[in-house]
Length: 423
Ligand SMILES: NC(=O)C1=CN([C@@H]2O[C@H](COP(=O)(O)OP(=O)(O)OC[C@H]3O[C@@H](n4cnc5c(N)ncnc54)[C@H](O)[C@@H]3O)[C@@H](O)[C@H]2O)C=CC1
Ligand SMILES: O=C(O)CCC(=O)C(=O)O
Image (tube, rainbow, N blue to C red; front, side, top):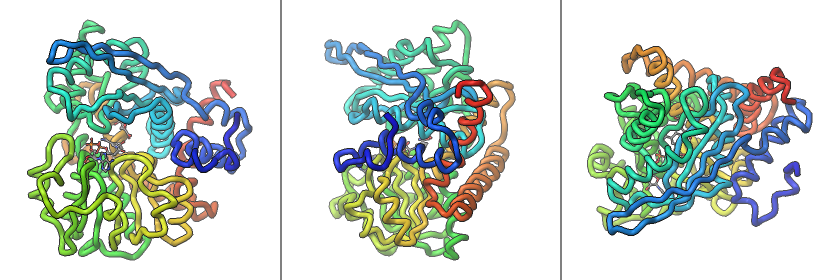
């Protein structure tokens, strides 16, 4: 059934798949595409559910559930990260794969969107258990992934070590070294310079562009970042280095606030590999309080559904830039936009990660590697162009930035599907 705004009841407002479908429908309608294009794009073309047995350190066997969603491969192979988190659901992974298609469209990569997830809590697992889980996942999905089919990457609670295990397992199955199977690898295994910080770099570039539009100077601008993992911690560092004052950061356990600015280098030094740092401090505030702090720039860089109609009226930032996927609900987007807050949506702001993943894949395919400066220069060009394309679409079509981003992002895959004769 086609989703439209009337379908969204109270209980559905936090359903990320449903809200994504709603915006895609609106974007396609505005662009004049027929209903069948929405029917094609509202769900992934392929969704694989796997059960992965892992021998735990205490001798028992635990069965984990994993997913891989491939949203649409009209443009090219599908691409997107793998999340290890206790709250992973099938609907969430589907939505995340659709967002990947949109991101790839916005930054104009030759990919469709994919995404994976395993229901687990890696914070409670040993290194050996995590390795076995990562390898088991690759064995389970090996038939549908590969460098020309679907290319995984890191996401929440996964990192370059996990990518290395996955790459090694795939190479064993494929019987030759295959670095282009996955991105976000360690440099010595064919990773790219700049991939680890790429998501935050892309967000930083969007912040600079958004500040220009709002006439705000980065020097002394007050910044709040929710999440201190890959995206959030690098972002806090880049903001600090640019002369901004990072007054708040958080992780899953709480938040830190100092109106005079936090010591970001110290926090980076003390955070663990899951982006946890607040446990070391006594005087913490809650994540809820953090989001409502007086600041210029708010960057949600953790999980979904953090800014909702409950707290959107209390957000005091002038600019909200979404490093996380899906941190703001549809209703909250409307409230923030009506309040004149410039919202740079996830599918644009967080596209730096997949952009440098694409660079990594290109380098793997050609067997020739670029310097950090080359990667940064290319990323800068891609992100500035994408930001201005979305911003101008929003102005021209008189729509909010999220809808504008969807309109830009959906067009390429709709056109590709049409040329292929699918719709
Ligand atoms: N790593 C990447 O390349 C990309 C990540 N993203 C998105 O950025 C967001 C963060 O991802 P990463 O930094 O990679 O993950 P990460 O695993 O490195 O860090 C996650 C951070 O979020 C915090 N967190 C988890 N649950 C939380 C909660 N309930 N409340 C507050 N904080 C919580 C964790 O404590 C940690 O600090 C996710 O939405 C992810 O999908 C988007 C594009 C690319
Ligand atoms: O680097 C990639 O391929 C995907 C990153 C990702 O999962 C995301 O942008 O949400």
